[in-house]
Length: 210
Image 1 (cartoon, rainbow, N blue to C red):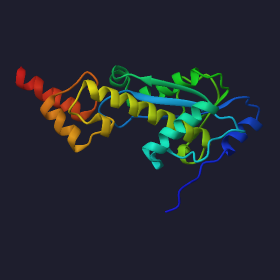
Image 2: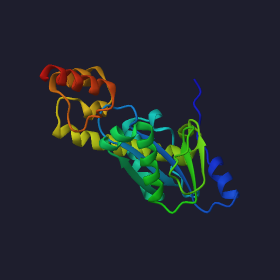
Image 3: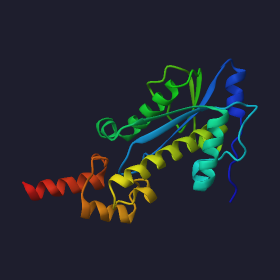
């Protein structure tokens, strides 16, 4: 199976059309039942691009960690989040876009390359949506790595405070072990109440207690 290798063509196009600073933007954490959604914006230096940038899902955890440090050393990076409360009140898509908007706001960019098919409505700069951008665009691939490593670290830390859910391994995603822990241990403050498995457990508890 061939895999796309991201390149700098999308950035080059935006720069050729007058942009002075172009950032790639990606988010991670739409699917988990727990934890924030995390976004990163990265402005690469075209003269110093780390080797091996790929969609973070194609990389081992060790390779992501190594690239995380390399990207920090040679690029401009902004990382931001949307909270569990924001996810529950806005919906996960809007919260993901809010995290992206916050990440972009942390850099002085004048064009954003967004992973996906939608442009966050709160953006104040021109943007291009790129479907599967983390596999096509080097800046978005870099952003996917920064967001993934950051969020994984958050979930490892939360796992120390809320043991039993396996967050250090599953990052809050609905694995069998996580779902079983929800049933036996209950819902934590870091669980997304608008997500069906969590909502259903809370509804069951309310039905029993009422």
